[in-house]
Image (cartoon, rainbow, N blue to C red; front, side, top):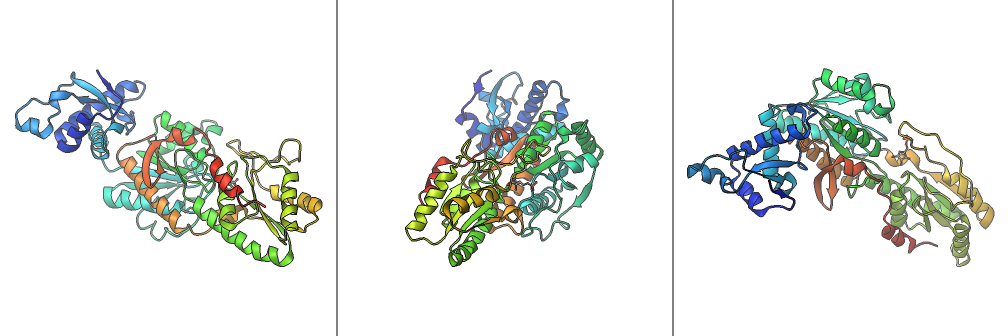
Length: 452
Ligand code: F6P
């Protein structure tokens, strides 16, 4: 068997142009057998298949499709196979092969799909839910069950009905109608077994997990254990790798920018230094974007430890040159250079993350003491997660929802949707949770150009 790593123009062109139903069905049968062999521990009907798989595709002279049938050439023989990556094929035939495989397994039917939102809420979650249901029910006839409060709903079996009717009007609504939590089923005795038992009891064929690093990490583990999961990345922090942006981020940046604009006028009136703390966990995306958008005089981010002496010198210098006020944006995860200041320890959640928040209160008195300028602190905190999503986030969230239900429909399990440029693509969930996407140095350098 030849292993085709690169797109094979011959295979791709033939599959795309001929697009013969019978041929695709034949390939689907090969795919079924191949997946069952690869996942020898799973029954054939559970071995996942998706766009990152290799499938056996009948070779050469047999790839004549409809033309072959018309000219009486025999149908493909299973022994004469090449291996081709579905990723190497154009989208349409690749999806058709996955569907043929599912049809062969008897899985190409109306599905019952579970959906949950996990981790911190963010604007756009409801828009995803609405889009998934609109296309899933409206175009494919699938039915849905919502699990309440993230993975906790799967442990407790707490559900709510989801249909086009019950998800109407959700597009502009912040938060999540499903509720959310930071429950980690792998931190609960028998948790993953309980999740699978709930899915079986509810006759759920596939699950859509909408969440950040933690929620998708659980989805990834469940996927390797045979659960049919598709992920949708969300977080205001924009710290997920494999996607250029997460929805929620743009809204958080806009809220922070509006707030800083307002702080400018009051800072100016009182000749004060304003320290504005924003969320973002261990990534400085929100701080740097909002700082650049609002003309902040300094932005402190987790990616670069700050020196409080330097911060104070810069502010003093700015005021000596005639400025009466200054705005300092500090990310909640910003840290002082080792040995320069002491920070209090925070509590740890079920995923082992330290609860952040309060660095603004630590640095503001230091700035006031060292510079002599009256200093105030505003911690924007959860305000950044509240309320209606911006138009941009509504659009990404909606496109993510549509792409997620398509992925489920195509059986592309173990993948998550992602934004690459202006395209919504599928990537392995594992890629999305592999490492934290921290602030790009080049972007921080641009923000730095405006520092005091
Ligand atoms: O991950 C989103 C986020 O808002 C972070 O920016 C912040 O550190 C954290 O969640 C706050 O979590 P909680 O809502 O549990 O306080």
